[in-house]
Image (cartoon, rainbow, N blue to C red; front, side):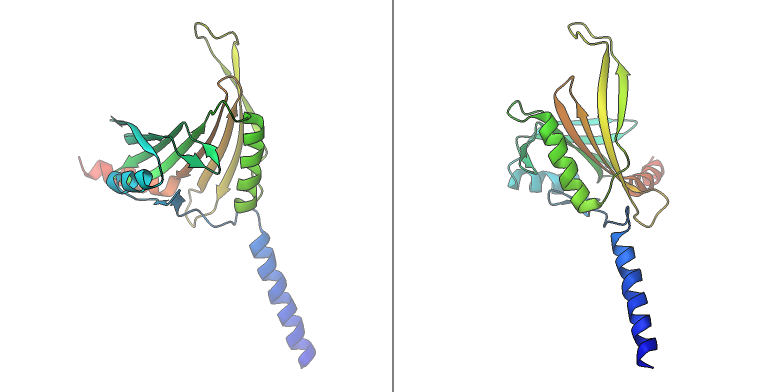
Length: 195
């Protein structure tokens, strides 16, 4: 009798450990830097000001909604040159953090942030390099390479929560993009009803 109970206990423990360690099963972040997904622009502004960020620019795009751009704060110890929140129906559904601090080595920052995000969210998809053709006066290169590492986190819906870490050596930037895809689609539907 005791042996049978012990076997069940070992099996349950094994299954629990496998579930915890499964890639892509990390908890979806509730927000970023104290801002919860679904927060209103005034709520975002209040938290950003308390954490040292400055509202730099606000804009409304008829196709994509309202954007609020902040600067002058810290993200994972790096100076942020831009933090953009995207809103639909007055609710935040994504954020993009841009780091282009001349004091930071972007290769080291990219590696450091990749390590931190991997520790928190598990193993990402394999890194890809996007070769983007450019044609701008004053830019010597003809192709801009952008290195992308992505995490797709299961949030219980058909659309996963996405975190993308990008490095662009041409511009000297590292960006972290958080997208609550299921919330975005829900808000798109609501914004169509608001017309």
